[in-house]
Image (cartoon, rainbow, N blue to C red; front, top):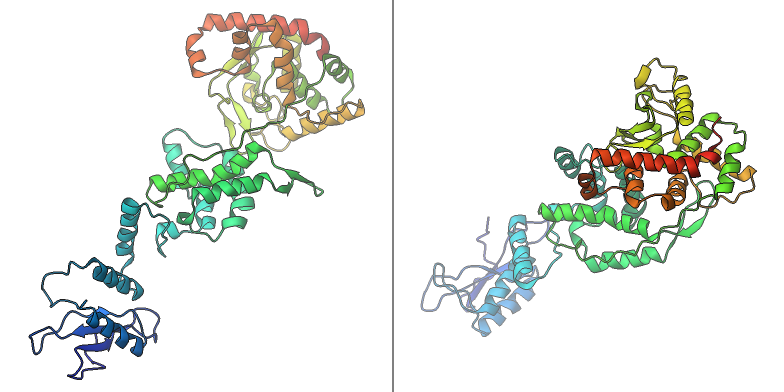
Length: 457
């Protein structure tokens, strides 16, 4: 409501000033508005215009300046002024006085972006003003994330192991760096420079003791991806107006080459008496089949066939049982001695689940398999006892071991059918009978190269 009390109404002045009530905090002073007498009229005044100041003397100066330059508001309902500078001053005064609503401000920012390519304006209490901590925490929360919900509905659910990694990255990197920043306030240049900064920074990677190292290029790329994926979704759904996720320059991956044992070292390893027989069998299976650890843990007694193993599922600590990595079932050849040992292990399952029981069963939960970490730890203990430098050797190294020593004896296509390194094009190309031929070829190579060193009792 505009006050009608004029602070200056002397007939000698061509204008009148009054203070309008503030829209800000209670008790704060509003700006002064000016009205001019219309020429050749005794009682008509122009529309009120803000002087943009709460100081009376400054308001008087502004009013006289406008009057002296003849930039005076026109009479109410009359034709609008064509003077662009005067229109600009009117808009600026309205902005200073807080006359625009959030909706009106969004229209102004959108116009600036579309016409002048000016980006980055953040309006309080709008979606671009959501903080990084709030937005990214919810984006990677399966119970709250609209993005993850849509993925599930489309049949393209994100594995919980990936979600958990993204959550950890957000907590460790994004929130400490940008937690209070608004999601709409970033630029691509700023994020690109952050990636270069991360590349030159050492981080503590030790679990028990402090160990400072540079992070791998692949992991640094994932750090940025944890935020950029969320920003892409926000932009596509008009939560933010800036596109700063495309054209990003990622680091060239430099994965560490997995070490593998020699055939002689592997033979000596399995000739040893292990203090954990189940871990020994798990390592023997990996060496003779090239299976991933999750595929071995997911094996059930029903998967053991006459001369092969059916790979129907994978197991993840975070996701439980799921499809194999490439989404397709397959078979791997297995000799009678390996199958005998696996059936013997399956028969020790105490949960009376028959063919549905896990071969490598958990001691605490009938619906889960064995703890995979133990197998890798026992492997390193055995290598240490042999005085073998195990540096970069892990349980997954058996998969590389298998491919390395079997590949020279096979066609590439035969090896791919067994290891699961198949593209959709290849899966469509090869018929079932060709797969059977491949299994026989791989089985012959295993019997020749790997079986003699496996020490299957």
